Length: 296
Image (cartoon, rainbow, N blue to C red; front, side, top):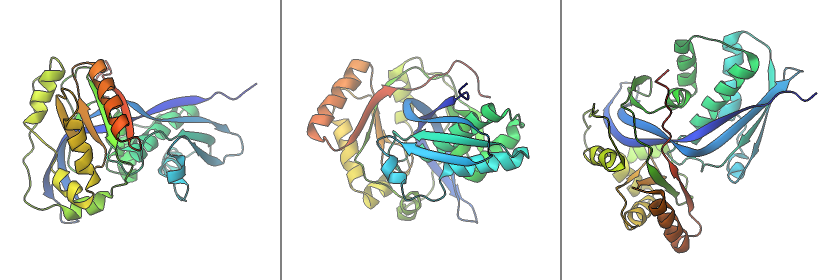
């Protein structure tokens, strides 16, 4: 009899807006962001290992970009969870790597969070939510929100997570020039002051309403990312030049950018246009994920 396999999606994380609100004495920046997720992403599969070992195989179009990693975040997540639960269980895991690495859409963080979800199910671990979020934060600033996996306002260094209004299902396009972008380097390149937190309470009724609310806000790292990595500016310009984008914006510290559209037909037409012009770019069309469940 085959061992059961637990499969968990690791969706791309999108900063619909991102304001840099301050900086702590220890050098960490404080942020205010509305984070949502796309129905595009990586995937984790896990099955029990009777010998107690933890193994990870990485497959997919971006697997080669993780080939040199000796301490993958997925394995670190597994080891932290096992230690926190006080168990000696093992697992064989497979990561299907479909998202670009170092691209501002939380691929590694989403993978780590998906590993935590898969292994809590596989091993029957039931730790308190506060403990799981603290464990996630130890792995990285974006891992807690990826653990939550639902649209939310995020503050502090990623540790303050508050429920956001329900978002509509919006067609979107993700584009990356296949140039890795270093988050520390972008923060180092950033100039100017800080931005205020600017959360909204309205529930956007459709894609146009959401885009209207987002246009009043921005991404405070865009100029720095474009200076550090000029191809990001090219991706943004290309998205803005597609037919009828409601909004074009960079996610996180780059270099993935996204555009929102009224219809999936428009998003797919934009994807086709960009692929014809830039066949080497990573281009993916999809939707914002809008789970019906509340923030857990």
